[in-house]
Length: 540
Image (tube, rainbow, N blue to C red):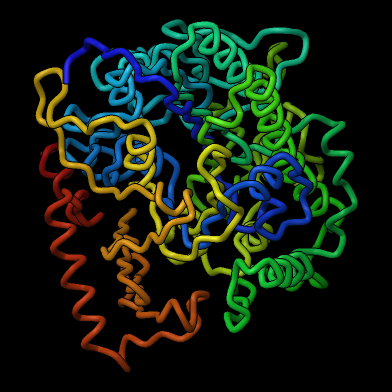
């Protein structure tokens, strides 16, 4: 592969991948939610929904895997974005991987990105003197195949003053009288479509929303739509969503909903119910704003006559997030995202019931009980590799290829996104890039499933994040939390992981554990203990 792009063949599809941040399996209407998402529901009504799509349990590993078609450790982002000095844990995309953008440029595609990068090194937004975009260890989208970029290169942050905001190669400040990051991502994505359409070449667009990741920031008119809706509480929401999912055929009715997480109180015992309602209302407003953006993107495609021949993929980077923002993190230098408002005012960081979330002067999360509802009917959350941490909606919409709306029940994984995009574009996966040998592609194209054909690849799928690990092969899943024994589940009979069969079927558990160990060695996976020991040795 060279830097010289080849002319695109006629009638190649445009490709848009839309990734959202920290959104649970049941948080959009077409996956059982009470949150109105008419534009996403419209894509599903005329597209394909996957019921067993998996991510990598955390933001940056999923992004690395999605963009490269590799497991995150192979791409250099097995943990978070800190550089831990070993190949699988550098915190930025390595030279031994190729991005979708780089591969499609060689096919003649224009490439653009709007949104969150988070695979380019470790940034301290409140300490800008410690980092420089595009410096060694801090690759930006423009260095990894994207012609145009608008967005943030770090992780989370304020929606009204997002840190590390860039326009192409330059750091910029929020603009306009009212700036809301979700809407800005959508607006810039629409402008990128307009620009690509004017050149007459196919385009690849990566739209990476930070929503609904904390903080709970939303426009007041969007919050008002949902405020008061959640006074029934998380138990009622979980039950209703589970019933909707069964009615839609997303779940087998024999899969019982997992029990309320042990750390979540029954709703009737919860304190500060008005505040709890407001927290979930703001979260719902964040999801609603994503859907509005998807509507704007689709409207622009229709306006330009591109909608029929554009493949749109929509998914989330991990399950709902149970993280608690402690009240003391608003102390100076305690929290890396604690930066002033646009007018220089203070921001109160922390889940404080005396303040209502939503405006830019607050910085809160919706916490474990509501995340438990987001992930209905599954167990656990972002970071864990039980189903609640890794199961994501996946909507595939391509009118020129989809024969009829349907559900796909065979397991798929974000490693398959790259393979599918290349398959749709008739593009090759390179063996080398800029003089570096490229790790062979791990994913499998699910384009046959989009076309209504039989798609059931026989292969194991693996996970590891911060010592949480799993392998799924066919109907069986072996999974463990860091420091705890392996658990074995029959995913045909028990996808909500309620009946551990590790002792009853020890041969199958041992078989899957052996597969996992072989994979871990091949893909540069290290245990947290080994990483800590290596770091200690480097410092001594």
